[in-house]
Length: 137
Image (spheres, one colour):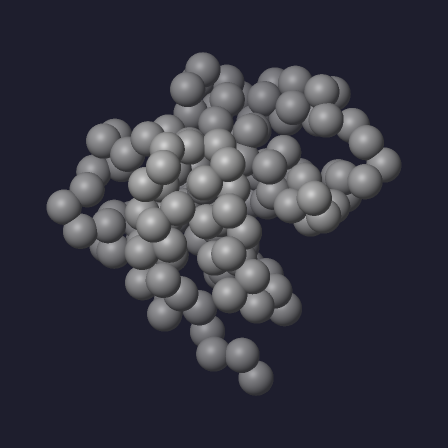
């Protein structure tokens, strides 16, 4: 597993703790980072993904809801909801990362950490959200 994948998983775990346990970002981040500290996980990237996703949660959720036809955030599996938040943030704020990489990472993480159908679900919504990213120049 690559270091950026590990960073994305740390960010996802932070968002998940915030969502499920109503923890502050700082508390959730400390727990996750303490458990995951390895030289192979880039802390700055993981922290920025988690913090940026948490900070922009309301606008990200509105964007997800625009493209999640017949779904409410509360009905989604918590892990899927947070993968969508994380990937949406990365799409909008990391223009150097190819969208195909972001979507593929989200799908693979969903397959590993969520239900059998989560990969398809995450892929379908992220594929629609990708249109929101400014064209690369």
